[in-house]
Image 1 (cartoon, rainbow, N blue to C red):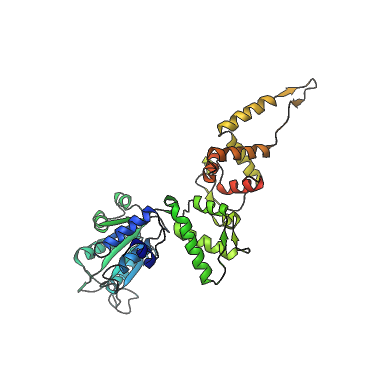
Image 2: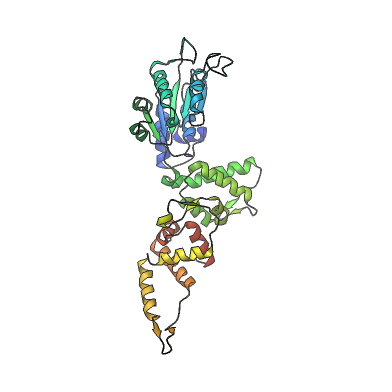
Length: 368
């Protein structure tokens, strides 16, 4: 099977080298029973690769059981994984199979495994090494044949160093590691993913597929997508649902994206995407002027030309013409665009303003 056929069969979108390399490794290890650890930020598609590993393996006719270790209370996780006997604890009114028994002959996908308690990690390690366990309240051993795929958005080595994760279990799980990069490190996949979700949503809701403007395309490509593919999908569906014209432009997406204030002192404070007061935007751009060398020189020349003098009556007078602040803003934006070869993301960074503010100012000043 080719990489393209594999992608089509298992719904993996992307043509970047990073994705193709991951698919190549996935195809190589899927046929074995070796444990696989999938790492990556939330929303990058770890479960998609877990499903591909299972359904491309010799176990594909048996169960794939997915367990979110972070969503199950610590007190219940052990019972959910290994099962229990009737009367083994309060509420155990019947014998119950755990996920290991249900997945016998198939695959058990343990998502967010870093959230698993240390006591449960000990039992998991035993199952990995011996393929057997004891149900809670049972005196007999249960044998299983289960392949383990684990996933986490945390750095497990750091978790090991901080004594939050067992070192022996970590090394047992990471026999093969698939590290899925975030969208901001494979921007070439963003538009392909966008088109896929746009088509899928339009077809499922029986509506015409909206068009995307050039400015909106650039915004989507340059946005960092902290929520990765999950955020991209949600933003697309929301934008289409709210669209009244069948055309998706910058304003269709700006209210749906998250951002942060660019000022150093507020860099880690989240803000709502709703447009801030014009005064704040104007002050931010004015402060940004002094960070651009060319504009700094211009400002010095302006200051010299408009140097105030004291009249005989004691009042302050301004010599020369006063240049309006909006003209300074416009020129600063034009200079920033030229200095970055019209890369709007870099220009916004150079100006120390958000991309949202830059797009609004471009429209306000009619800058192409």
